[in-house]
Length: 294
Image (cartoon, rainbow, N blue to C red):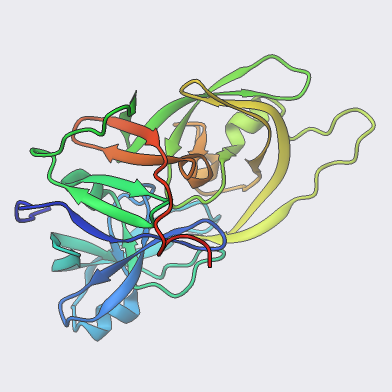
């Protein structure tokens, strides 16, 4: 990633879709603007094949990748691409090219992944409807922000959480912070099966398996209530979580236990600081007139 220093923070609108996905406007080489999905769960940034073709970008180096969906998919790569967000330029020596398909996602030009977060300190102000990029060398943390330290594994921030199933003792898990997952918590199948979380209570019907679409095709999951979920001292009681039931793909991984999504983040003004390995949670700002419901 090669990007010019930021003379001042760069701010762009932050759109939260009806399903909870995060979109930001990105300008590409021909001057056209496109919505991109903001996704800490993406190891690299992506362009859709349609946008890459419109820009005349040759692609090479096909690689097999996996997402939450059960099927592998192919990523090719284009070179020397610049993505512009407000006054910030993200210059990528290599960017992935692959179809972007997630349930509830409107048409987009691509995905902003780990490349963006490694280069900038990223501030998400949900109440004001804006994303701000800061130069890590000049950025000053907001007063009163709570700091959560994380480790990076597979390019994603890992955080500890505690889950309490109804009538049972609390369980500890390590989950990836994934801004491409719009719900609160998704627990991966290996963790779910190890702790028998998908088993129906005595006398109750077996939970119905639901299906969706993500990178890699069809997803399978059940939704169930937990008595409590605790993230960094923030306790959420009687909340719905997603339990993975896929038979293949990343949701069967045992390298970590699941995903923490944007439903948790949206209660705060959030700063994601990859260079210093920390997540900052500040009180939400009051909505601006432009961001307030009409």
